[in-house]
Length: 334
Image (cartoon, rainbow, N blue to C red; front, side):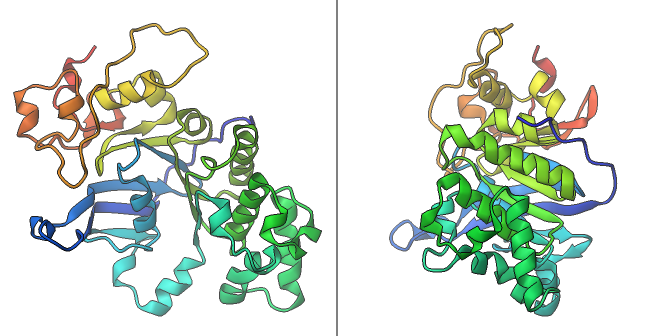
């Protein structure tokens, strides 16, 4: 793999989520009166310019919903999302459209994210036709340059998606996302649908492009090895809440939250373990009916009665202000 990306400089956040909640209406019928399903619950998050932030957690924890809310593909039910200081929910349609040039997404499955009936060059050029500034022959030149940038031949612009491998299709999806020269890209599990043999190539592509272009990246993944390699900072989610956040190096070396410890303990490693694996028993509760108090308490090896009634706030860790953790017992953990 390529060397890890450098840490972003401090400054005003490019993207900021403040107390973001996202509710979904339940299906009709006898259970419809029991209230909405909360996929996100009071999420606070920042992504700074040129920074790569990894979002990890088990399936159903709200990672993908968070990415879509940050892009305003889904509006928050409560709270707000600011992009470069502007509240996306309160913008006129024309201003929001102008900002969309600066935020793009790479979806999980390259087989579904590309139109099988259109040539890939046309699909990469879609954003240019909408947002510019290229016109006429300059659009074709830009498409050719993008294909070179992601390691493909400019002549591939004339081919259809079915003529490419999975890894090549994902490179095309990355080229399409970069076409408008965005400042912020959400990559939603961009390698999970690919063969293991080509995952590293796509991850290295993200690292190289980030170093070259300086885009801010929200990288959603369940692969902790990839996140550790690529990201400056890591956000750990569980049942719609952020339970821990911090610089990647310190979070992976010394996780604070019991859930983070269990996730890392369950990840295969080439290095011998210096401590017993953390226990993570039981099933993930339904996000439609989460536990009271701390959402992790039903699986937590150190939970007490207090954890059933108090919702732990996400706050600075005692010994490291760069870390945040939501746990009533964190100070008692060794």
